[in-house]
Image (tube, rainbow, N blue to C red; front, side, top):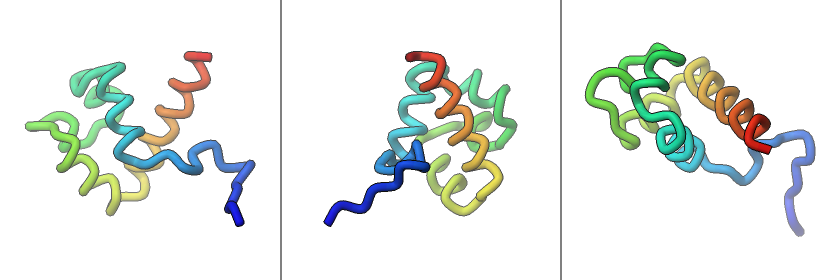
Length: 75
């Protein structure tokens, strides 16, 4: 049985893919300006950012919203 979530546009998309896509599109500098968190501005890396985002709901929410907005604008 497949678990579908039609009301969740992020279903099946990992946080790592979200972050990787955003970094590829905008770069760390722009992400750090838009979402003011230390792991985007000081020695940024996917690994350190994932660790922070997985334990900080408000920051993860901002990243997910930016991803959704980016995907909506690219269609």
